[in-house]
Length: 77
Image (cartoon, rainbow, N blue to C red; front, side, top):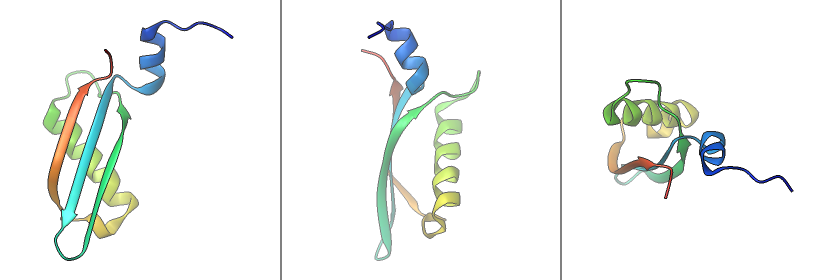
């Protein structure tokens, strides 16, 4: 077993942890979570828009959905 530094694990996982919940009342709702490394200079808004677009592309039922919850935090303790 090879030991990894915490910075190596974070890079493999992504620098930030996100949780995103989308809702179309009476139709569909869902939550996603994962890690993501934003491009240099990106804002929280940029992250939200990019993640939501990726979800909508993967599942068009969520196009035009409401953001019920969004969290983006550094992926470290």
